[in-house]
Length: 354
Image (cartoon, rainbow, N blue to C red; front, side, top):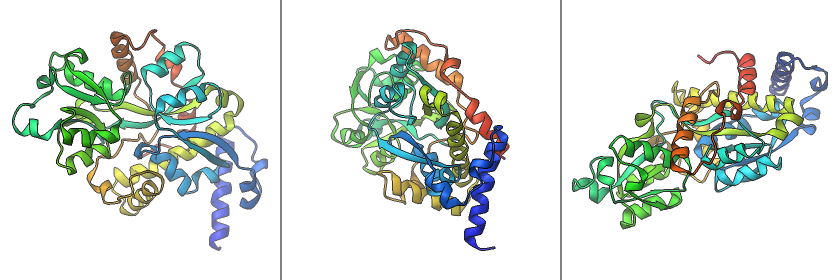
């Protein structure tokens, strides 16, 4: 059997498995791959083009989306907050973003968005977010722990987002709060230079900017988030409610391909499969602004749960923090914001990850 024929068999087997598992009919996909490709379902997708979007990029490059009849029409966003409105109105079907006080507020107002899978968490060994101290202050002993940040300039990108909530936890452990520091709002990309110039004294930063700040000699690392809050939920895959209601089969097929890609990622970075790691790094250098392949050997990667599971306790903890700060106006039922039916269906098809 030639490569083309084998590939066709894989495509049809994948599609048939999905349809049979979800009670669908295999007839529409019983066609050559060329015909199947012409009928791809295009999903309007918003991404930040970050390393935590690896599941999307791997699924594209490995052909997993195409195998289940999905094609992504990607719109880049500079902030997950900017995805909330287009997801709520159905202008986007899928988003790779993050929960926030703003998203919780939107959900409380009836905006139709669901968190459907993990897209970045601080699983042990995957602390891709951390607390940095300005190197000069750390080496002189002025900054040793978060207790020394009182009155200091500390940067996060925005209020009501997970880096700010993590900073709040670091300060709480030392008997401080966000009110005890001077918050400076800067994009992650600006953190390394701001630390180098002395414009800020500390920051909560994600990769690759964390490693860039260290390489620049501008900062020292106090602690990564996986040490502070193991399993902390940072980012998620989001579906619009309209997409769920109008295209439930496409929503299930998307998730099957996405979790296959996430498992490929775990094979690479958890199980140490060298060949797969090279392929993942190639995908990330192709699709994200981080083009230096060697940087992926030095920086901490995002944790991506192989079954897509999200930490509801982590989400609930962030809600309590934002309610206490007044940036979230109304309590929501976290279990209503999270919809696990799609990861559960995909795991039924894929089986448990070992």
